Length: 447
Image (cartoon, rainbow, N blue to C red; front, top):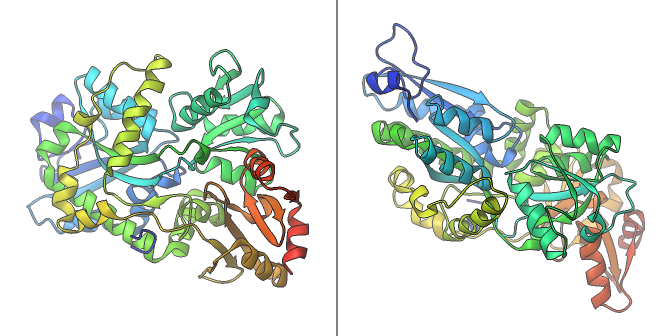
């Protein structure tokens, strides 16, 4: 573990040997179709979605059951978690992956509609909240969250990114309901609105902020890690499915763990596989999923994440999206414990690896890590034509960001990177003589 210091339809109920969900193969009594809903471009779910699918580990696990059934996996790709929940509560999806706020809505809708679901594992997480970011246009004059008062902000209501926006605005003394004009938009629509000037800012989840920054279409305004509240993505399964087909669910979770280990051992290759499947730049995938990326991947359901999930309920209640939710009743890691055996306790106790600066040289299948941002800058300065991507952790939050998109501060001989202007200014205010410098200046100083 290199990166860590390591609902069913009536027909399905009547034909449990034909399909797990509502997608039975006609005329094949021994065929079991397992329907998996995933979000290919929400790349912190890749170990239960995009990467897992490309590696074929789930199919291999199912084929090893030797229980007299032939298994088929129906992978269904969605842009967000909401349609996955809709399909699960209609008995058409057995296993789904989504972010923490959508997971709570999944729990609420499942109970409400009589098709309860459970959180069975975690995919990618960040203990400080760095997976969500508020960005503005590259030429925007907005420099802090307080500047958003009276402005138009795009987000996806009910998503983890919306939760980050609400909490961040409250801390900045802005009423999230009355202080801004909030537009409820799908990520791609919001990104287009930002580019066209239709909105002043965009609050979104991985991988949109990093993608827009990489493309030169946005710059960071607020690093979600400033909240210092965990955010994560996880796997949810229908209760009926889990009870009727426990070995199938366990096979999925074993495969997820294998995909996690593959990502940890081969982070560059994993990023390239996800890039090939999604069309996202590999450099952006690596920002989040790399060896020192913003996300840590681990299927264990850590207590910190469950505690954060309980805190998230109040945000959804305030937005009138749900009522009370029994989080403890929703969380069920018994299948994961059985699937992983003794290794589960090890994963549960593992902590994220320390943040580090990292360069991805052109033409290389390996990256180079550095102990400090200064060392990385010196390397980049001497190899400017041979750099595919350079990443640095925010000096305050640890959130990884592209070196050429970071806000750089010179403090004596030290060069410090920050994701957002406000965190850089906070550092400058506390350190006499410190000042912002351009990326080019930082490179010249380092060389």
